[in-house]
Length: 281
Ligand code: DGL
Image (cartoon, rainbow, N blue to C red):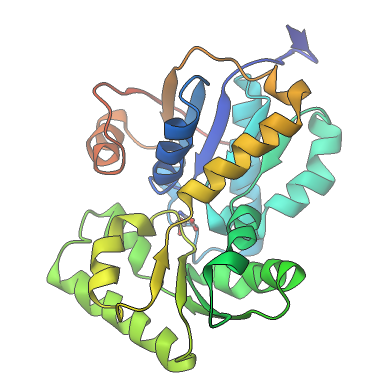
């Protein structure tokens, strides 16, 4: 079916600045294998973390439009930085003119929703990119839901480049991991829960565990996002019926396909990946 020249039924779009969103896609597919997915990584322009609000918004909008053009009725911004800096504007200002029947969802709200049940001390730390921390999105979302929880943020600007460059298991990486874990626990020694507020960080989880006192819970967000998406589709049958279900998964990258295939295999175990190179504008 087509409306305004655009396909109205299709795969669920999953977007990230690079490979990080694959950690979210992995959990979503584990919970909902029957759906079709179209992943888009803006690998040529990653990282988004240090970029301005305007640029992250512009790049994210381009990606959303591309996924709509390719038939996605629903797009998940599987990127905290894009969710923090672009989601609200896209939902409020752009969707009504592009296509009010399509939806764009982020990862910060579903993650914030789980926080209240995870922390006993009511002191939570958020490890994320500079962009996400500066936006104060986690602070605001958690406050709305759990005003008694104290949230402390720590920007870890080197962590995404370490992952994107496959250097995350090196000794050099250890230095940057220890530095930020130490700094956040110094800011608030009562933290009992550390949220990985960047979709790249699950790749660092073993090291983060190793450098964090054992009583502190380390929380990646993938399963919460997947659970929240399933719940959303249950509550919105009109959207669910537009999401096609043949169990397929395709990948788009703004970089070369060979580079994507090689690096993506670190994030996602799949026998064969169908990758296509595209440009965003
Ligand atoms: N994966 C993105 C996130 O969750 C950040 C990566 C970047 O800096 O581009 O924030």
